[in-house]
Image 1 (cartoon, protein in one colour):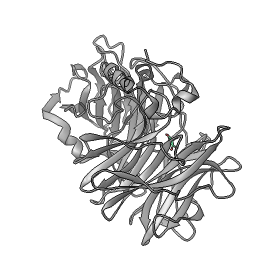
Image 2 (cartoon, helix red, strand yellow):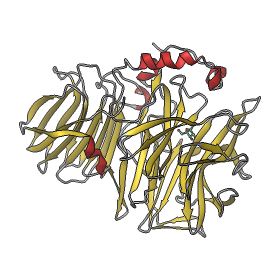
Image 3 (cartoon, protein in one colour):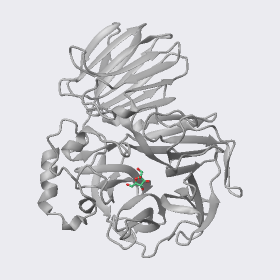
Image 4 (tube, protein in one colour):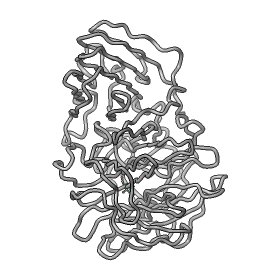
Length: 493
Ligand code: FRU
């Protein structure tokens, strides 16, 4: 049971320094006993994690921050928590770096991005402020982090209010270099309550001019767009974003809110338009991906990381005073206007030993003992069958992945994967894949499963909350397959 059960608004917004220091120690001790703690995914020490922020490469290291509320598994007053890495797969916790302690961010240091500029990392984020009537004010703010990891906030806002015609639902600045200057995208809502992406431009990062709405679709994008992320590369333009309240006829989805993308041939700066955009697509076919952030690394790879969790949804670990995690880092590849998402090559560094070959029997059960592994399966053409992950010996429980490569169909069912949650959004996700011999690369880590299909043609990510006896893999298929499994090294303390 959670240490604190009923959270009042006052408690959620109480400044961190007013909490007894022992409270966090107590939480941490209790959470350490959870059977659902993760081995190699970024997770909060205590409390709630949501969006990844400031994913970047600076001072010869990878950096990622996340939205954090450390006092409990609720959306309280947010800060930025910082982690660094030399290889994108082992992360070092650096602590809370941006606190909600100024006039412009008193009710939350909300999401944003980072950009290396000479010897500093420029951080752009939204300051969330509530007035006496609980009205929202959104400021786009800046800060500098030096090579020692010391952050200094820029005193006055970069943008102090939304342009005329837009509401205070105005947040999540993404800053990037463009044409010798800087561009910013911001998630917004117009006064008729339609979701929009606004752009700003700057030559010095401190003064910003509004340059209008980004034009990438003629469809309505729900009532609000969060976390826009525009990647303009030589070969293509990719826009990732989270429309809230999207009409499912525009792009079919079951999660409370989807994380979508479009790919265009290019971005035309003058008309603020993505040229020849595809229709809207789901970034992930699973149950829990949101607020994905991506950037082009100095080695030219497009890298992404996502929040694995959804807004306004309860998860079983809420009861244990912690919630959510980040996905593994993926490499994004765009080929002929199609997006492929693959685990970064560095993930191989986490494999232990040579791996175990899985035999080719059509009906087999493998005991993993750990639920912390990578599984690679290649099936003969026209195979169909079911893989059950997190299965118990009796095979009554488990997460089932049903596939039919001839029809090009995958169905994932988490209704028996352990403690159930999110019932109102359904237990099943079904989607199509190319009709070709199926390849699956699956990462399991205690309470998260990431399934990469056909070398990243599709990805399905989900949280599951199995019992401790659910550590098996059951494979039942018509047709032969080759399989290999590696235990994965634990990187979290
Ligand atoms: C998306 C989001 C962002 C906001 C942040 C607050 O999950 O709502 O729009 O900046 O979370 O934590």
